[in-house]
Length: 344
Ligand code: ADP
Ligand code: MG
Image 1 (tube, rainbow, N blue to C red):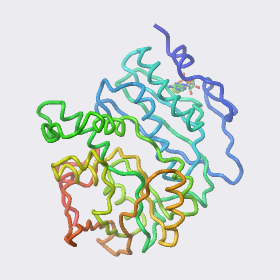
Image 2: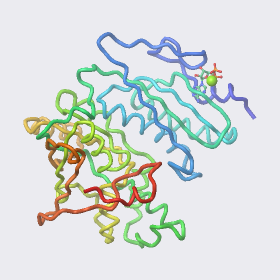
Image 3: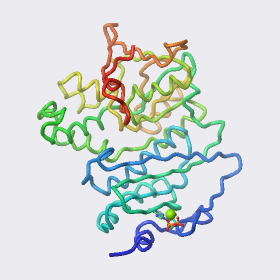
């Protein structure tokens, strides 16, 4: 069995092109171009918490970088460098080979250099820190949404949550058990699992929104929960038209209305961008959608708010009535009464 340093150099050491010093020393050395800020974010995937033990390591390698790229996308930053920290239960070379292949496939696609990390024995945990570059004046922030902004969503939400429901469905006795019966085709099921296990970070969209959007966030914990962060940070409230929410074919097929709404609104793991822009930017946003061949949909409007109206989200049905969801989004430390609590 190879030792720690042999494993690192076999699977994770590559000569850097941009960094002055990469994997192999105590520190990596980076230069940030004049006028640019370093955008840094970190995200951790824990076995049993974020993925089922036994998940395809190639896909895990991709997802561990994808969720971090998604954070850079939400800030409109250009991806540059990454650090990778691994806790591994054992030195399983087949696992490492597949994991690193997945990691590199996405790193190469976005020209991200791996410049260091840490490797230790422990319960399977993957932590990536990503670094990118952005002119601070163009960085998209959560606290810069404005009264009257249109709320936009890339792609659609809910497929990843449906993929998770499919996986849970196959575990007898689960909460979801039986709910999905056999409504999905094999192709739809595969698509939902791909959205869950191999999400596509909207990096190009984020960069195209520089100077166009006022604020943005990526959806990792569910549409309502992440919109809530923007509203709280910006001191606003929102109206959403439920009939405008894009719905993937697989989700349309789910006859359990409550499950469908829950996937759309609070599913999580979507990695779409939710952004706000003034009405005058509508044409430019439609041009971006055409150029990127990515649907961008107007789903609501933001309004000024005071006191306990800050963060309020009103969900309008087509008939004008209001929908009151039971779940807002995923929270690792929520107590049971919070997760089921009503908001209004
Ligand atoms: P130190 O003991 O000085 O902290 P380590 O022994 O942890 O260094 O790591 C040796 C080198 O290998 C360092 O440059 C570190 O950044 C790099 N490294 C360790 N683990 C990984 C990994 N999983 N991916 C990429 N680089 C790694
Ligand atoms: Mg170390």
